[in-house]
Length: 136
Image (tube, rainbow, N blue to C red):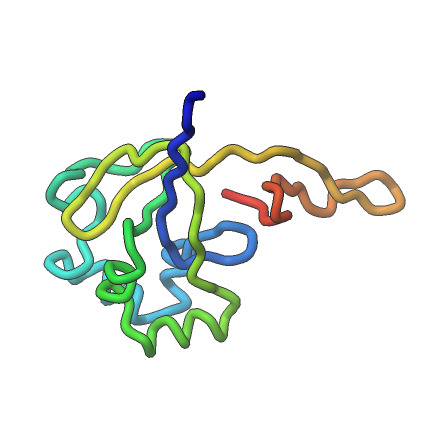
């Protein structure tokens, strides 16, 4: 019997799977992270990755310990107050291992649906997994 290897990464995101750095302008400390290449390198500056993100990739961490070295407890609390939580995300593949973070491809959705109003106009497109969480 062939066993399947299940891989996970940890990241801070919304219930819709959107990472906190998409909202960098809303959080001054995330802007500071972006300028602190030594402690918070972009994938392009992270030893082992040294490239930009490709379509479909997300950033994350191989352990909660690494995530907590990246974000302080206070930063996590500020993000949580705005709807972000630490998620254990199933991934198909870790495409690059950096010194501080990893790039990965999220497990694809199992279903897709569109919410429409009474006129048939799209209100919100939703792509979800078995736990009903959508992804980016």
